Length: 555
Image (cartoon, rainbow, N blue to C red; front, side):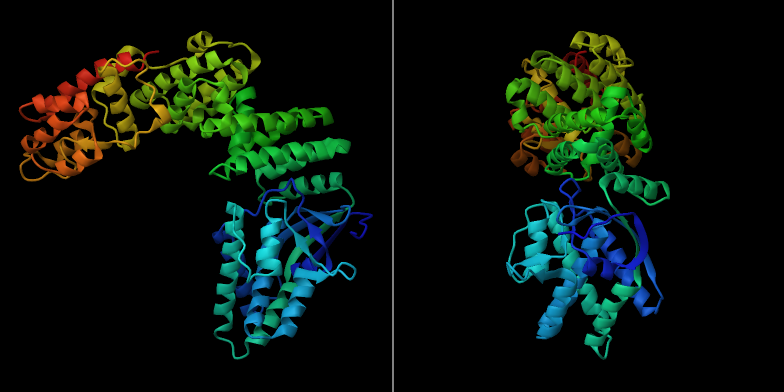
């Protein structure tokens, strides 16, 4: 049972005492262990430098603790608490390696875990959230010799911190005449001189207010943490409902390949409803709108639903797409290939508001729009996101209710003339885009329906051939400036099977022609019809491709 916190207290404490004197838990709604090796390394280096320099104290930030039922809850500071606990576990392991069981037991019972007198079970001083605690407890706190498989990226980070701590400790004692005394001095420094501001509050509402106040005082906190704590503070007696919604949202996003996606999602979701919002303004904007308990509850519920859509945007193998046509799913995969993340607010709105048939039509339209912007340019990333976010807002409000209206509202899309002129001189540095363009044009040349749709966006099945090679041999009579200007031009590029492409090499054009004749790709096979390969011919071929492109990526 946690000791009752009856009033707000603020004290300067050694973090070792904070760990040893409290039984703490990281609530389920808090994020998983997030510190990368660079963050951990900085803290450990600062700690060891401070003790070497015999500094009186070293301040590492604040810890905010709120009263809980069985344990007090960590509202802010879990990363530092976990990282120092890991360091203390590494000190314990050194003593274990020296068969110094008395000191192993002392470190274990003071900082890491104690034995419950009734159940005789080990009770950890610090529990992490549901995603991390079992791994943290069994791999680091309880029995580090036992193999426990890491199943999340946060587990890998915990293990990395543990290994780094052992490495730092080994280096630290390597110059000591008495390693035992050196490590005991280190423990005392962590107890007395590695300082935190320990804030204890009697309830969550106080904790969330303190958390926000600390941020206002200049502590660097993630926007997602600020927002989470703001919503929880607004939730009042429905705290558990908001906690559950937030945890579901976070878990959905955390299971993607990019665990840093939460803030991006929050910003793009808000932009899909309210228009473009910059990250620096996000917290202030949301705080200004979510002004009641019911709004906090509704918003947290909407976040969970939107996160499901957002994850499906990124992963087209998600079961979410079972309600949509294969064409819609493949158009989405193609849009992902373009890596135009500025479009996601609009995509969120379209999928949330349109029926499956309109979704398919809109995604097809946006594939063509994307290619035209990629080739023509004209709008920077910020201007594109501005436009996509404004259209997303109109979709969310119902002002735009179908693809035809979206086409009318989406402005400054390159016209056929603009697109054709840009395509005629386009050079493409990104091979994945060049492969997509050429594979799509190949399908159009062969009269296939929906040529702009590449199933599963699988452009890795073919190689990209530079007719004028990137590293030409002596048979190519071309100066350096001309080579630089033409080698990445679309008219100079072709797609080939991996086997054929590996055989072509950097040889002369005449030597290459026999391989082009063997190609099953129409546009590649036709290269064999040319007598030679010059800048003029590259221009001619690219003009032909540009005519085909207008018909392929129609708007």
